[in-house]
Image (cartoon, rainbow, N blue to C red; front, top):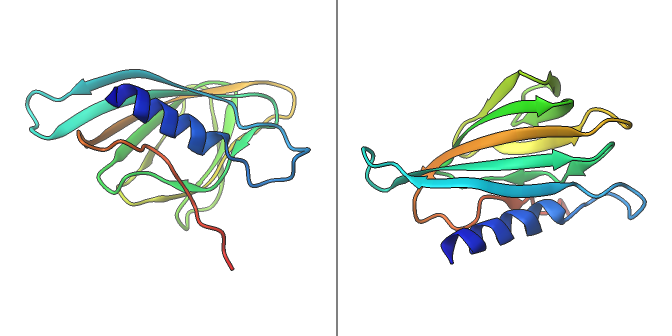
Amino acid sequence: MKTRLLLAAAVAALAFNTASAADPAPGKVTLVFDRTLPNVPGKSMRGVLVEYGPGAASPAHTHPKSAFIYATVLEGAVRIRVNDEPEKIYKAGENFVEEPGSFHAVSANASDSQPAKLLAVFVLDSDETDLVTPAKSKP
């Protein structure tokens, strides 16, 4: 049940696109593992596969304040901006980190013609149910 809630929340959050209706949908999100860390009480490791079609993007978002995230690009290239860092393109084989409490301002496929795929590994409090929270609109 917990895994289903987690996956549903991640998919719903990433499926929400703040761009115009003509823009491509964000892509597919799949929870690929969820494991309690036996040597770190109260912590779990969760892996999420994020697949972006050509030109697809996720809306700005945050992750749980307990979450340390290590992401590796598996295919294609993605545009990423976390916190106040400059936007950067990561290609297959490259990785990036999101510290707990980070704001993920940009997460998008860098190509309008090729798909992109990344694996995000979360280390977080085991009782977290939502992996992604869409950013609130600015007034």
